[in-house]
Length: 186
Image (cartoon, rainbow, N blue to C red):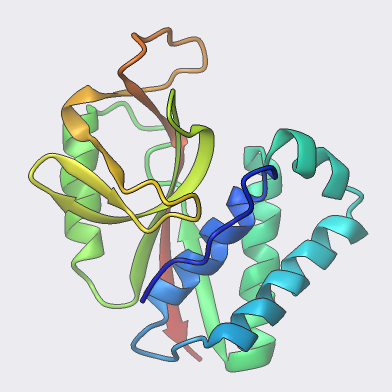
């Protein structure tokens, strides 16, 4: 399975991250084919239009509150269309833990059925970007990414506090931007 790819001049990576994450997490329940994924994409884009957020996201990307609204819209869509719940949580948002411990937690979580993980990262290659973390082997974050970015070295990643200034080779990872996904049949 390959990730769906976004255009190079838009900032809709959050939409692609939601769809790609659902595809990974729902694999054992239902494999969303291309036309089903297109309908899913159109539904989430319509949600942006209806909320008056399309232009804002087109030029500036998706902030945390809107990401949660999109995840809620995705959950309702999958429930109505396929009897699938898309559950999500931000497990590290208010926790004080090292990135190493978070890495181990995510690795264990992804070993379970029906799971995936959306991550917000920022580095000099993809800048501020939503993606899907799908591998956590050998200190490497592998991505199922809409921009074609394969991943980043865990040893060169740091928590982004919002005011973090890092060297140009580091990847900043937001605690609030790690979203664990679980798909279940209802």
